[in-house]
Image (cartoon, rainbow, N blue to C red; front, side, top):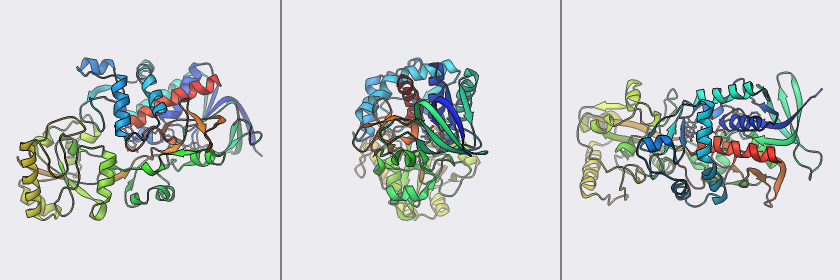
Length: 458
Ligand SMILES: Cc1cc2nc3c(=O)[nH]c(=O)nc-3n(C[C@H](O)[C@H](O)[C@H](O)COP(=O)(O)OP(=O)(O)OC[C@H]3O[C@@H](n4cnc5c(N)ncnc54)[C@H](O)[C@@H]3O)c2cc1C
């Protein structure tokens, strides 16, 4: 027999979007039930690199970085190839700084902003310990006395009285069987992406069949399926992209390593470059998938190695070396032998590239900077030399439900589906064609709060 539970707002998913939304709603005086299908909360958020994109913060000012909401907006639209929904980007831009302050007020600690990041005109990556951040927001939710968290409980269907009535809850399966949760203010989907559903990824992005897939185990697209059953529209599905810089076989360190953003070049198994290495690591992901065996090597020298940053997972070269993932050799020739790339080709590639560095112009692929608009090109010349085997990993799907600027889910005719809200990786329309570092976690927390406010206001 199905049990019944009543609340005001039902949040589906216990990652950053879900907890930001639940806490925001609770702070507005709304009672919430939050469902998490796994035994533990966290989702992809807890496994992530912890980078969030904010503009105009005190941390940036303290480091002499001049940034603004306008510049952030321009960058988001530019990196998204203007395929993103400007209204949704505007919502993010309007609420990001207040959300940064809100996170600090909850006790979240940020590290100094980091320099090298995909798609950013100025440094704006604010780093947190991601698992701690989810735990902290979860603890705040529990302490509010307004949020009931049900683990091991999977939402399966959305509930409404008729086809035209607003969504008023969800059917769920928990440890003790079936459950109907009725929510007077509606349902907020924060169930993440579908990166762990290989069949579904294949349907939209078959070019990534051979990528590595990393992400929360529960992220198989439940939220999308439930909303689509009600006629929800989707956006950005053709822009599923892997992130460049994932070791092809190692699964212990699931983060990308981006020596290219410090000056490395990327070469394929023939020792040839194939791309402007300064572009978004999502576009680099597309480029590596088109190479033989979908793989490549990031090639760099000692000064580039030394410019890594141990505080930032994607730039922590020392740790990769300790883990045996970065290959080191005294000479370029010895390195070529170890990675089984023809030495003559690799040498010619490095020499040609060093010439481009001197000339300030890459005649082959048009690389001008190390990353986006930052950093002067660096010659690769001082041993020891390093190689990092790199393919693309699908860390998230960054596409999904079409929503309006208030995070209301829209149907295929562009009408809001009453009582249904969504935030985080389950939505489409925010990133468009590519991705700025920190904008997925940023989107989860910023838009999670906005969705909760919309739901609270009805
Ligand atoms: C290794 C890695 C590194 C990353 N690094 C960064 C980074 O540094 N910066 C950045 O911006 N982005 C990063 N990302 C992406 C980012 O982490 C995600 O886009 C973001 O965390 C998504 O948050 P979310 O709350 O929407 O989803 P999640 O955190 O995935 O949470 C969704 C939750 O919903 C649950 N759920 C799913 N279906 C149901 C259901 N039917 N019922 C109940 N619960 C359900 C899931 O189990 C999960 O716990 C990274 C991702 C990975 C995997």
